[in-house]
Image 1 (tube, rainbow, N blue to C red):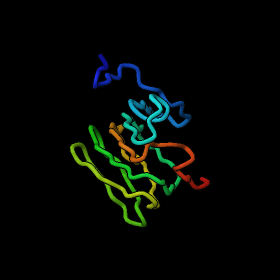
Image 2 (cartoon, helix red, strand yellow):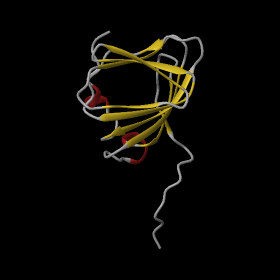
Image 3 (cartoon, rainbow, N blue to C red):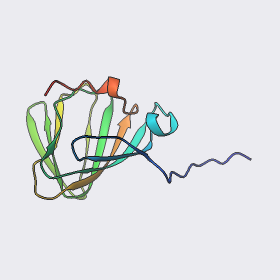
Image 4 (cartoon, helix red, strand yellow):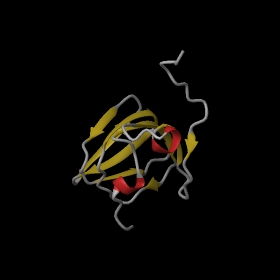
Length: 122
């Protein structure tokens, strides 16, 4: 009998060079799912990424700390317990300019893929 559920005990650890921890629980790197990705992340104090214009909707839920978003020129700061949806094809920059690390979950629809992010040159 086929099980109708999947338990993820060994997420894919995405290699990074900026101190950010990325554990993909479901998505292209973990189970080949191109429809959706779910990742647990920890952004260290002082972390930031270049602006990007992804071809996916991204939902973020903050577990601990704060995270800054610059979305089409608006600066938004979320704290623990808050969430946001950023629609695909929206120019955004993610960062943690705060003292404490930020722990959060992110869901991307369709799944995160490097060729769909469209990061700008730093």
